Length: 338
Image (cartoon, rainbow, N blue to C red; front, side, top):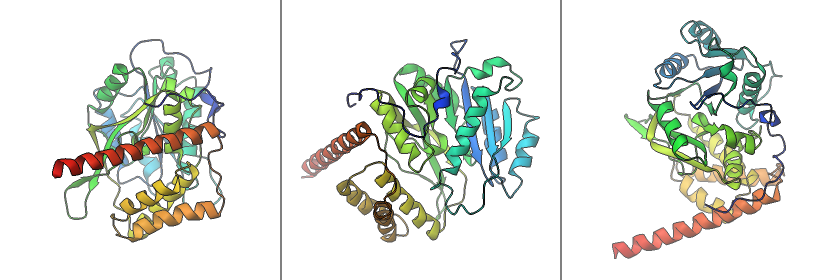
């Protein structure tokens, strides 16, 4: 792990509300706050809820915040409160119409922060009592992700075994077009934003989660800068139930990821290599072009990047290290095959 950068002010737009007034836990047992920003998840939300209810280690509280669903998501969640005493259901404030790309406009993470703010200011909490305010971990869980029963128990054991583990989560699998399940491949140091869990200490140290495109890279980079580990665990397999995106949706997603790379100071060499890798995904060729397009368009539009110079230095140092390791692995693989 790189040496932690000296402490710098919390990133602009970060959630300052996770500061000193967050009470310390009264007991040694983990207290997990799960937050789910949801919209039109009526086909999946009951399954997700019952998977939470079946956890070997129950969450201290689950807050589901609905952002104007056009289906029966809110009604299903409201009915589930009778079964799940740890569930709180909120409605997000009504927004002005016209958001074309909710992920690009960070609507989801804005609602996550609203729910987190509610949890830190609501004195009542669920029927368990005031202990619900004293969370040790915060987890973002999407409304289409089903956890296995041992998920929270094992995840908390991993946090307990490594005091410097700051952000962690499992892997996602989803149904493939040809049948069966396929894993969504991501680097080991990256955790899916759909099921990301922060330790209390890490979330406070990084100042919360920024409400902007690229938030799920920015928070992890700041965590490593502060000396925390970020890791996904391949043995914690969760099912992503949302249907596969259309070609248009996939291309938009690749372009969005290209814009993220620009915002988070990924350099042109890394971006070009990444585009070649992305080009192998369906629709082949066009996916890589969309990734490059998103990166170049963000630069042409002068989209605001992370301003912190320490962040920029740390990111570029990390990328150089990863590229060097990739080259060495390639050389070793070729030597073995000779």
